[in-house]
Length: 119
Image (cartoon, rainbow, N blue to C red; front, side, top):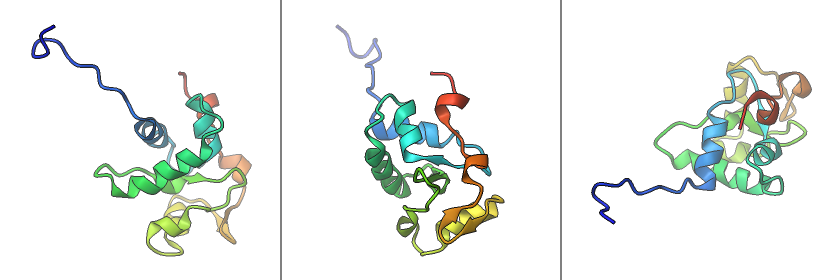
């Protein structure tokens, strides 16, 4: 096998898969750690999606991690945005109403990749 003439398949990491899905969350919408995990076929790994969101702040490519909240619309990852209100401010700049660190009308603006995307 000549590696110079044949492409070497690159395994895509779980974090990279998460980032690809999060990058598709539309402006003005939010998703949850669990919904992203279920879409990726790993329903029990919502915590790993959270770890990916925490690590995304070190990426060169900007990931809209502020659009990922917990299953009840709570801004559980807000401490990873540098300031206590930064995550809320980013969401509010997209027209999303936040009250007491929770997305108002969460069900209305929730984006479920399993329903919105084709595998």
